[in-house]
Image (cartoon, rainbow, N blue to C red; front, top):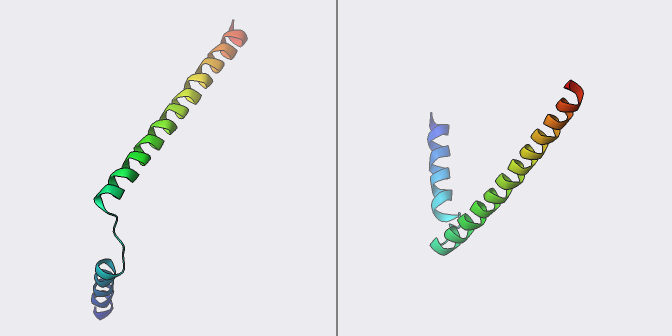
Amino acid sequence: MSKIGNYVQEAYDELLHKVSWPSWEELQQTTIIVLAALALVTVFIFGMDFASENVLKFVYKIIGG
């Protein structure tokens, strides 16, 4: 049990004294960057899904009819 307590104490000490936390402005800026990248990836995946759906519909139409 002493090892677990020691681990928790060292983790707490590291979080307080060794981790450099971002400022509020840095946090806002990186959040906006992440949201913009997420939007771009979402649009890209939507485009790929839409294109593949239409290509498959076209192929099934040719094969089936």
